[in-house]
Length: 129
Image 1: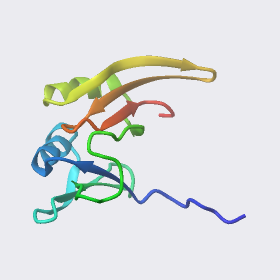
Image 2: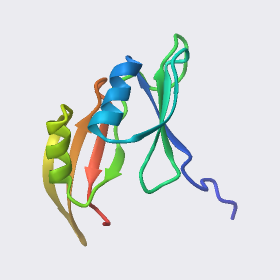
Image 3: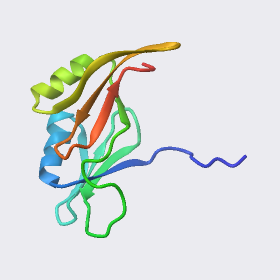
């Protein structure tokens, strides 16, 4: 059978203010910026432990895709989500769902939700680590 998905190249989100977004992803999450294009209001960040990148730009009128602040369901990993959330808050970030122990058949893990300045939400979990 032919594979449909062979990897994950990038996660792309729309933001409202490129400078606020850059500060959040660099200073709060500690991601390494790979590229910044001022005129295009576009930035690219490395995601640790993977070749996948996180890209962001200001959505132009008529552009397809989700509006700024509507992304959710992307999961970042950390062995201690409680400590990660404490650090995110210390750096001025927003935790929208405090770390919570999740128990499902065959698995027990901690999960939390954080948000960028536009309200795009990301999960932090230690599931599978």
